[in-house]
Length: 71
Image 1: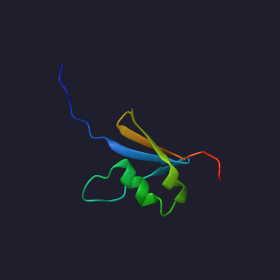
Image 2: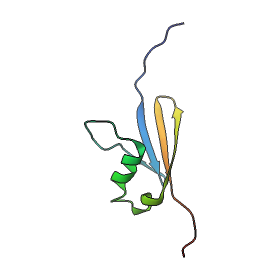
Image 3: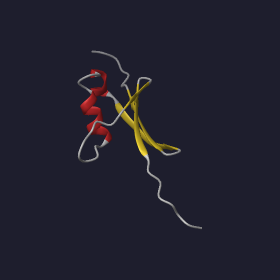
Image 4: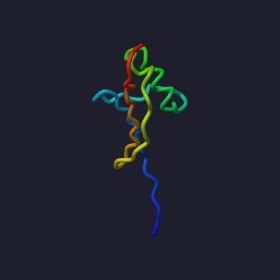
């Protein structure tokens, strides 16, 4: 049996949307991607990162909003 290398793409999901990894010279961690997108989606500041899970040639991370009570 031989092994073959396969390129994978990293996908970030949040609130039913797919967020692309920002262009960068070095790969970003999921927490860095979350911080990058928090300017557009402030709810991400309190979100938890779930994953990775692998589906075919994709590595999927999901940002889950924190649910709690105020006060």
